[in-house]
Structure formats: C-alpha cells, structure tokens
Length: 251
Image (cartoon, rainbow, N blue to C red):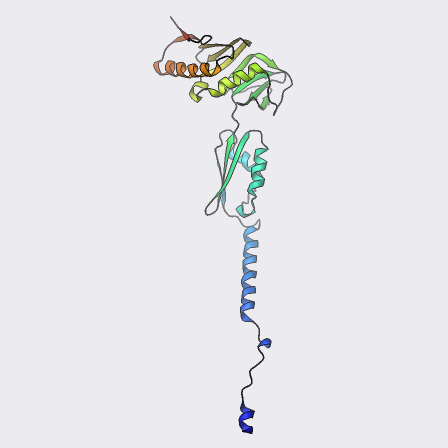
C-alpha cells in the first residue's frame, strides 16, 4: 500500500495555469480597437459624400461650407455638424442627411431660389420668394430673374427681409407663377401701389393694377401666357385690372 500511495496522482493547481480563453479575448479586443482606430484615422480614405438638390450652390461650395475634408472618411463625419454648418449659409433653406449602404453619405439640400432683383443705393439686391436678400451686386452681368423697376431701396443688405408692402406683393405674385411662365417675365414696373405692370421677354405688358385679387391674377397670368406661347398669338397687352381679363392683340 505504501508504494501505491506514493504513485497516487496529485492534480496540479489550476490557478497556476494561464487562462488561454481570457488572453484570446484580450487579443481580439486589441485587434478590434486597433482596426477601428485605423479606419477612423485621417490616413484612411473610405466612402463618399453625394450632394443632391443643388442648382445654384455648387458641390465644391457644399464641401467647403460643411468643412468636409479632401481625405474623406465618413466614419469621422458628424452629420449634425454638417447640417448646422450648411443651414448657416443663407442660400440653403433645408438640409437632409442620410447614410446609404455601404459607405455613402447623401446630403440633400433645398435652396433659396432667387426670384427677383430690385435696385438699391448699393446697386442691386437679389430676393427670394420670402423677400429675403440673398445677395447684393454693384453691377449685374446676367439677369436670370425679373427686375422690379420704379422702386429703389436704401440700406438693405444680405439676410435682411424686405418689408415694403408693394415689393412683398410683387414677390408673392412671382413666386406663385408656373416656372415656364416666370421665365417669360423680364420686369415688373411699379408706378404706384395701384399701378403695377409686368412685362414679358416678348414685350407683352400685363397690367396687374393693385395687389388685390392677387391669386386670381396669378391663375390668369399662367393660363393666358401658356395659351399665347402654345398658339403663337401676337399680343400687345393683357389687362387683369378687373375681374374679367382683356387681351389686346397686335394689329
């Protein structure tokens, strides 16, 4: 029996053996953290940013305003910061940002569109459909929207909202026109608040009179100018001063 007792197996102390599973877990975590840090580093370029909805603001402008770096890493981009920076630009009214699998960020913007110019002591002011001054110019090289004549503003500047009631009425009238019809309008002349006339690029006068019944005058303007364009009618002027429109044809 003494010999058997001397040969009896004595288990080793498990506390002295390294926990291989724990070490493996640590190694996996280290690799994951290192990979994440590498992916998020500025040296790792991944993904793209797509800009949609822009007609006036260029893609380069959006990148510059939003502070999107040339070495793009979408994991480092904070979409809330991008949205706030873009909304600080007066030309941009709304911003929506979404992620598109697998590695694309989509920035959809809604621009404030210029709708009319008006003269000022500085030169010319560009207004949007809410009467907000989008830009100021000393000289105009190109006129891509109508001009209000007969009224001159003073010291209004970029980001100001024009409170002049007559200008507000003109801006509202233009903003409600169909785009093809708006593109035909070159000028809105204001002799007085009761004597407002629009002119087309074909020199057709549209006598609007006052700002009363403005929505009706918008509908009539759209209908009549579409018909004139489609049927190639030679018109001298259109009188919308009264409820029943009058169209004077050229001889």
